[in-house]
Length: 220
Image 1 (cartoon, rainbow, N blue to C red):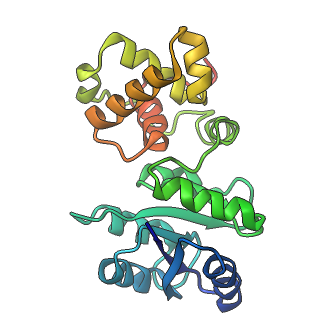
Image 2: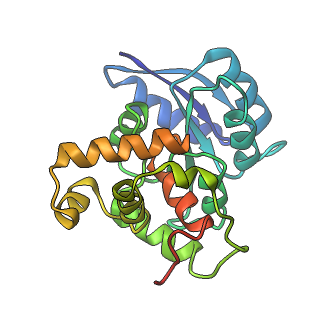
């Protein structure tokens, strides 16, 4: 399958750089470019890319609001990856909360960019466990609001709740398997069931839900 990518950044030079890297790769096709959030929303609905590379800061409509509009649109199957200049951007938690599948630094090496796009297109979240831990530490060190219990958590089995808690703590599938003394295949099955039952796109949203619902407490 050829991965269809939409580039969204207000700087033409940044888009040019990404396009040159991506179009040189077999199996990846840049189907369009947007210079602001409003254009990004319109082009995504029209071009139906698999992955949208979305700059956090853009004129007219910023990347956060554009992502919120896109992923709140019924039938949208595109995955959004936020582009940022900073290692830990102040807006990243909000981006993850509204449904982004992760983030990439604009100066990331080409191999990291390509691996990230392929990972997101295949359904994985673009947050390595180590990065997940840093995001958790940065954005969830102090509660942003009173935890809201999510009734969907009641649908999970005791084992699935265990798996969700470990995902939220930044453990990879192999680390979860070791922690719970399970096979890697079994862990993958549990993770898939957790995401399905909770109606989540990927494990990034699972991390956010676990903290926002109070299932896991930062620093505990």
